[in-house]
Length: 148
Image (cartoon, rainbow, N blue to C red; front, side, top):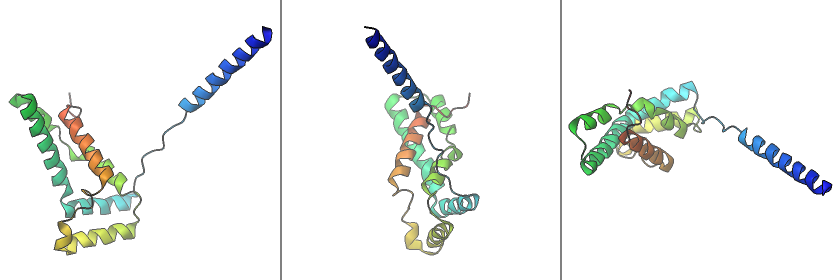
């Protein structure tokens, strides 16, 4: 009986130790490009007209939700005014974090020089970024970016 209590105590202590160690693990920070690469990514966004795409996408989601849920005009305006591209910019930077400067410069030149390439958008084809944009737009619709 004494042995059973001792084993139970040791087992409980072991479980407590393991769970505390697993809770103390930190998630790594999101991957971000260098400052120079951020400048190039901003130029790519401008050349690809992606900022306009993000805002238009959010407006479409807001209009759909407004019609579906019967929002009054004040709520629709308040939600619309909460759209801020800067709140989504880190997701864009993150999607380009693993490109080096040469690859980004090549992509930028393709957007700036080739009109046929301008009709394609590497950001709208990136599934992770599309998913992040959906989440961002849904959060806007839910009012999570309304400043109080």
